[in-house]
Image (cartoon, rainbow, N blue to C red; front, side, top):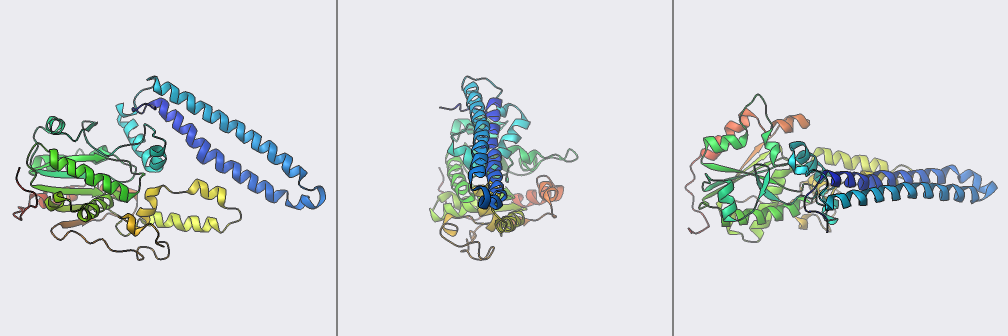
Length: 373
């Protein structure tokens, strides 16, 4: 069994595995594909013998390099199992790296039971908090009945909300100091499909409401970029399952979220279509294969039923069923300028912070669906 703690030795092993799968493999296939075309004119003179000799030598060479990479990866995994190597989560840089890797190859990590694969959890002080009353009481000693749950975007983590500009307070600081809410930051594997992360978030929110040390009277969900799409997926799944806690949700705040599909994901599909029209494109397409989360982001899909068995590539953002918002929830949408810097600024912007405080400070006298405990 692999170690449950991701270490620097696991990073080395993962780098070797990815090099073998996504670099060496496509390079080998592209080489053989090119050689097949180069040798084509000579087949009428010398037959296929020169081509077969070249292919045998090439496959042998690539096979040797691949075997060395796999052997090195196995050795690094063995060191990790013996506790050799510093835990990745010991440093902020390591945690950021782990989050980015999950966004890129998170589905692959989970399928291998790799220790780098993140599990969805509430975080505090750089550690996972168990969904148990005693653990939540210890981690949040000033817990109130208003939960404000922050869900980060693709390749980010719970600490992304600490993005500092001019030493201004973070959104979590503002919620804690200027409202009656208790801020909670979630970390999750952003490389998984959005619908799956939505189901995981539903389960997490159910546990939080059930085991929270104070009586929960209100829930606010704040999502950045892909995080808000995951929030929509969670509410859609919870509403379909008749989850009682959905009656406590009063506000959903979406910061720079691609609800109609991410433009950069649509652009990647155009690029892939262009490449597919070129001669022998398969080796290149293997290296461009997007993660599972990319497809749902491309069209803003929040439910498996809207994706599986349907031709959503025919018309972007239109060939799908609509997911209705919850009627008792106020949805707030905040947009930013073009480019990644604009989206990143939404993680800590004074105007957005002031609006967030104002939205959360509004009195809410509407009835709740959960009975008093």
